[in-house]
View 1: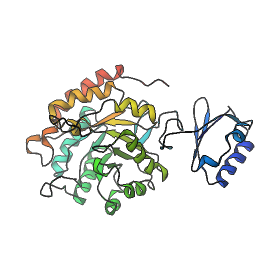
View 2: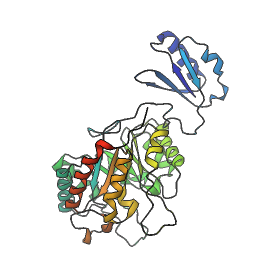
View 3: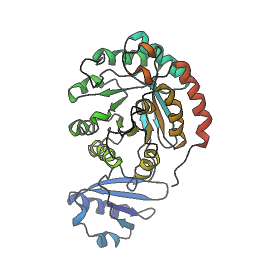
View 4: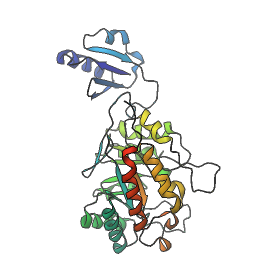
Length: 337
């Protein structure tokens, strides 16, 4: 349920309304917008008398929200959320590119790639320390050493770092990580999501391989229900009957998610397509659709990469793509308020 207040509501009446709702076990989330203030009511709102609230002098309107996701719902929060990742803002008109290798392989590799993508305009550095792999015999990442090397690359370049968490037991290793990524396989690891909700650290939440957009938003809701509202959604392709690409990139997810939610939405064309030649055109499609950013895999020697080399761009091709992005961005779709 949402309660839309009139302009300049009487503070005493507002405090009394908030206390009454709190006594009923209803959590009140206040959003102050440009034109109005909205109270988002979370909990068992079935026992609330809408007519009673509507009769208050400070109330403009009361509406029930049918969708199961509340905190992530744009009806609760009409203005775009801006997520701050180590001083880099995503959302609300702030477009960012996260770039780097699929896996951290060595100090020389991660630092070289970090310097290259920063020179081309990337504002955040990605790199896998813990790697979820289909085969138990594939490279699983450098683990703790991988995070240490990411921190070293951050020290040399100033780029905030983004890396994936696999399990709750690893959480203590992420103190120096600027943004924690929840991968597609963990999108519905609800115990992990609940624990991340207790942090005050940005979370990059990737869509599951076969997940609906509502399921993605419900996973975001798990994080936000714990108090952490710094969530960025990521479309990274879904599994369909098509086998030519690694996954099928759902470009329509960008405008749909931005209609349903106030959270920033970025796109991962690398994991979606699995082919470096398809990354630039799908990345540009995401930009045109109004995405708030991209996360792209870049490797200085893709042919010898320990993980996902075929979908990685070289620094030269990444630089070329960044020029195309800069040219296209003024023409990107903008959601109507």
